[in-house]
Image 1: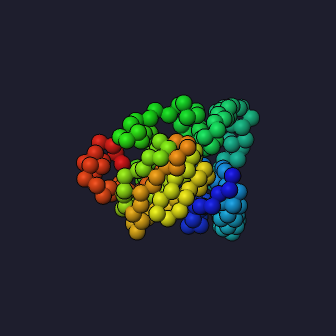
Image 2 (image 1 turned 180 degrees about the vertical axis):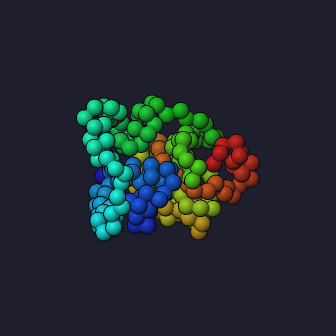
Image 3 (image 1 turned 90 degrees about the vertical axis):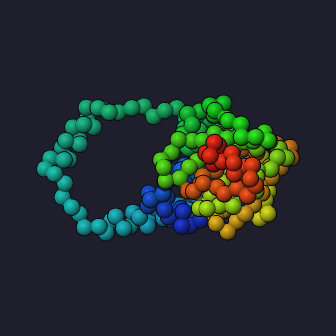
Length: 214
Ligand SMILES: [Zn+2]
């Protein structure tokens, strides 16, 4: 897989620092799991955080913290088996674990024109959804009030800026108004996260927006 569209350094740094909303953490973990370049860049940011921690002046913990911790480890209390990693050809492991299975675990809801979506439960800072766009179908023209990242999981789409295939992440912000069109041949499945509701240009999608929660 050749990935041409990556996660920005500022988002990777935010991920390493643990300051992003859950939805952004999810898409970054998913992309990093299939992208060697971003995994290496993330490793560098994490090393930076590690170096900062090494330099922090220590603060003493409570009396007997260490022995209490060791006693709990020995007792095996709270130990759980790691869950078996679900394997899915479309959903990389972080996403598959998040939805509790493969594509067959997704509860799609139709949003018209054959497009389906599944909103994923995350904290309120941003929202995450899976989008299913039939081959050849377009998503309504929209611009963005905040930051929107879209990662292709299956198939491909194109818009005014470029073509995006599996693994690619499109980063859209206030300045981009676009009409993504799924390529002919294979239905397109994407993970999309946004930190603000999308603004649709047409009146029909705008009317439907409150009901679709997009
Ligand atoms: Zn990447």
